[in-house]
Amino acid sequence: MTPYLLFKRYILVFSFIIYSLALNTAFGSDIPSSPFSSENQPKNRFDTSANEYFSFPEPSIKTRISRFNKNDQTNHFCIVGYQWTNGNMQVWVHWQEQLEIILWQGGDDEETQVDSMALARKELVLGRDTVKSEDDINGSTYLITEAAWHGIVDDCEKNGEKYTIPPFSPENTE
Image (cartoon, rainbow, N blue to C red; front, side):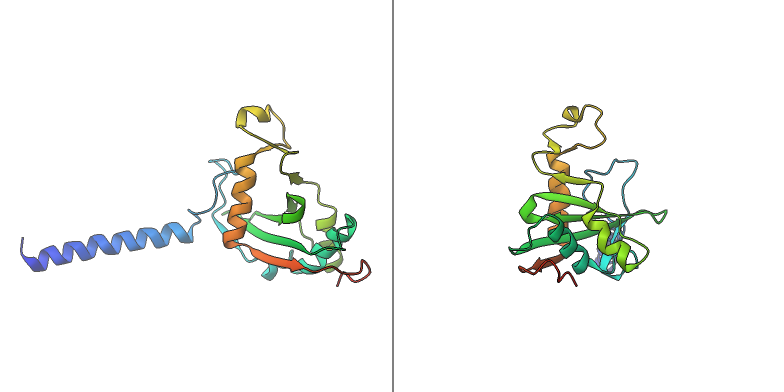
């Protein structure tokens, strides 16, 4: 094989590898597999603060902090959103000080959004709502594995939107 053809072959193989890496990244190959089932994997992340259902993150966070009377301290939050090919979305919020992840439903308007994080129906506290293995879930629809919990938290740290909320008066959630 001539050096020119050999060079073309390497360029073709290299191009294929680069294209494959770009395609996998664009379609969410780095999204944690847990807690999502292999049949129900999100395809990408989305910018939650730019989405109409989640566009008031700081007032939402402050309302949650106030509800739990933790407004006298600095609190750290991270928000990550996942989207499926059918348009379904899921947004997880990690509250570092409480060791919890919150499934944030968002809302159609500002008032609903701001209240929705404080009233979230699914909040998973590490150690309380987590178990060591899939077998330990034992049919529960509420428990997740510690690995799944950490998967969301780690992914949020790498790819999510972070918020540091200093102490504030409970009347000042704006």
